[in-house]
Image 1 (cartoon, one colour):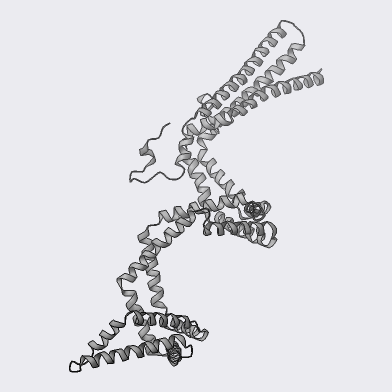
Image 2: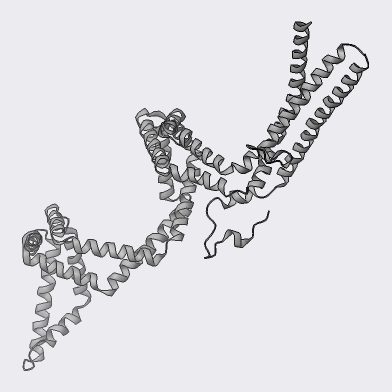
Length: 445
């Protein structure tokens, strides 16, 4: 039976519940099902043919006996008669599974169509009790030894390469699904919340204190002195113009120029000495200033408050927020590129980690036991938490099957073997009838 699109979608546009595919499978006949059903028909003809055969034998044996053919006809007739009884009884039993024999409303017949829902409930309970119990799951997983097997599997380079490639594909897929705007909003909110909650002045002070104590700032001072000296050498005229421009209007220009040259020479000398003398007093003064500033950042309330105000002002600027929001795009592109490149540091490190993990899992019993415990715990949690949902899936799926088609489909799959019951019933009945008739003749004379 074909199902339309409307059958699969509810009146409110909702998709059909899980099990819809299974329902369609149980209400339609495939080519393989038709072939199996043809095999069932052939076996039915064979079983029925044997019934007709023993019936003919019975009639002939009785006719021969009445015609005085001899005592042997009684044995043949008894065997044939018992064979008919056995064949008919097994025909009734097999037929009663799938339909009412000859359409008669005999109690306890057509078991599969009428008891389908009860069979589904029983099947769900059977699966829940015998396959989804905590003891069964733990025992089964413990005998499998997942930790050692997984370790041995991962320790092979080709398997580590395969897992690495699959992880890279999954990572790219996850990044493709995520919307940049959503992630940027989350990242921005996290950074801003973290920055607001964390006072930065003490941390900066400790870092600056350590930098000054280790002399790490001296390279920066050296660089500034060198660049300042070079700038003064290249911009002599600008310095002179600046000094002359700030002189009073009533002073002679000659005097202004002399003052400017003097200032320039002293400034150049100061910068040169500071550049060339590691023990220059200005360097010592700078060290003391940085040391005091580092201490103030950690202990001075006013300094710390000013730093916090500056932090909030900087974070509140639109350029900074745009930079924070765009950070995710840069990180995302970097991760995607690394995931796509087989020789990237990311994939190489993941592969090396998988190989190392596999080697350890295959040789270290403690790690194996830990992995087995994790797997067992996860599996037990799933089966104990969702056992009712799993068993109800079985029950609901069976309940959704069409009774007639379900019966026909089951018969197509097991009906051929059931017809052997009829054949065996005919043979066994005939043998039993012969034995009983022989014993009765022997005892009764």
